[in-house]
Image (cartoon, rainbow, N blue to C red):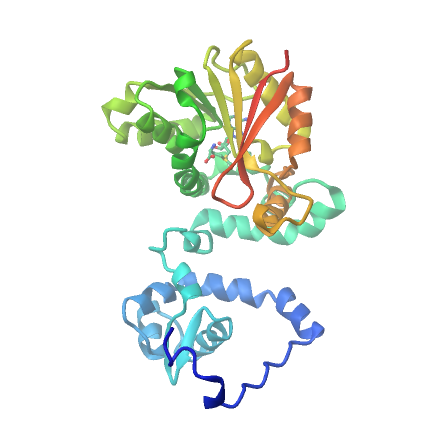
Amino acid sequence: MNDTEHPAPEAEAPAAPAPEASAVERVARLATLFTPWALRTAVTLRLFDLIEEGNHRPDELAARSGADPGALQRLLRYLADLDVLARTGDTYRLTPLGQVLTSRHPSRTARFLDQDDAWARTGDRAVPGLLHAVRTGGPAWERHHGLPFWASLDGDTALGEAFDRAMAVHADGFGPWLAGAWDWSSVTRVADIGGGTGTTLVTLLEHHPHLRGVLVDLPRTVERATREIAAAGPGVVSRAEMVGRSFFEPLPPGAGAYLLAHVLHDWPDRECVRVLRGCAGAAGGRGRVLVVDRIRADTGDAAAGPLAVGRRDLAMLVLLGGRERTEEEFRALGEAAGLRLTATTPAPEPGLHLIEFAPAD
Ligand SMILES: C[S@@+](CC[C@H](N)C(=O)[O-])C[C@H]1O[C@@H](n2cnc3c(N)ncnc32)[C@H](O)[C@@H]1O
């Protein structure tokens, strides 16, 4: 302990308690659209990166970001009110919250706010469709963008690539955990169903040299996965197979484990049961089906990350008509597909779990 941080009580008059924000003000803070857009604007202008690089004055930041100096000054003040920047006189520096918004932060949060990124921009434009989604119970994406979600990605190369890159950011986060979260020595072949561009499969094959893998995804994604996996080097390529096909069609048989990572939450129950049944059939009597998804806790248990899961639940509703599910809901999906839920293992990410299924009999 040091005296500067902890002055003796008699050395200073007790600070007056900060006035509590009124309920009206707290609701106004929750409701304003300016906070999410101020953060997106600042990330897109690279303000957090520019400050980190040593540009602290508004005129420097305006010149380097190409923004109007007067308007930028007003944005900077709002960002300081939000505590993502700290203002001293007329200079700005990053607070711990602001550091999260730099592009080199390991969370890569900035990428999901950057309006120059086709996925971030297009996904954000669908969010006002929440009203439609709640009224109808179905996704809002098509109403806003003219095509169903996966068809939009197929029809727009830049959007499809940006989406696949965003998924690879997630996969980078959970892949190493998954490689140690299950007994991969018990199988010789894994099928990654809806495996994206192969980030997870590459991680599994790198961690487990005895393992062979097959990735199933839509043809446009498999084309990109083939390039990504080639970059992983011959030791991995020779053990990986790619199948460009819908997972609603018959799946490659005979793998010891069928992995569905962040797939079931994209779909309503009926489609989930179809995919799970396809995996169960291809796995035969002994194979396992491994689901990586968030488990929604209805208990309000903070450790299970209810807010993190809740906002993704709404995202799945708006984008795809999918949902985050409770453990009981996963169990019921498994039972409808002839599978028994045998174990759940939490990941470091709030709410994320490995959910293991075995054949029901
Ligand atoms: C949310 S991403 C998850 C990707 C990857 N498993 C991960 O965890 O990062 C869902 C994946 O499902 C794929 N997908 C969607 N519909 C599909 C279908 N009918 N057949 C095969 N793959 C599909 C998408 O292309 C995408 O790669």
